[in-house]
Length: 223
Image (cartoon, rainbow, N blue to C red; front, side):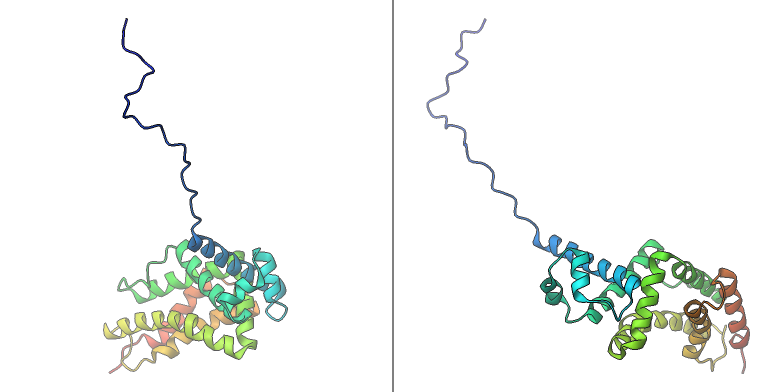
């Protein structure tokens, strides 16, 4: 049995501190990111429900659960909100689809069919269809918004197609005088027309046939 005292402390021992740890400071940047994403999601949902003309900053703020001034601190108008929302939507589609860049396997037809099939799947997905239709219509009725959509969203996407076609042309798979931009529009124009006007179902078979037809016209190498 031990004879050492169990409760006594050395004279130099200091009493345990009774002070509580300082409160953790909230991460303002994370809170801002959440609010920003909530605003973009709200804008996309509402523009799909009510259309661009009836969309208001007040409605976006109410749906996102933020103050109207929070939106105006980041964006000057609903058009600016929609532009960022459309860019976020495109980013979501790329992430969910596992997009790793325009493929270049050496088989131009297969690469184009792969990308256009993915586009068909996205257009037919209700998560993207309604807001994308509304955003397209908004760009058609608001010249400033349309110009910015083209510059920041559409043109970068078209450039990917042009780059792939340029690679094929340099490899001798397309005629030397092939107009790359015209070829891209020949591929995407009919797809967009069918989707916007719902003239017929948008299917993989349709885009496969589209690629074959277009390349059948521009794919013959001439001297």
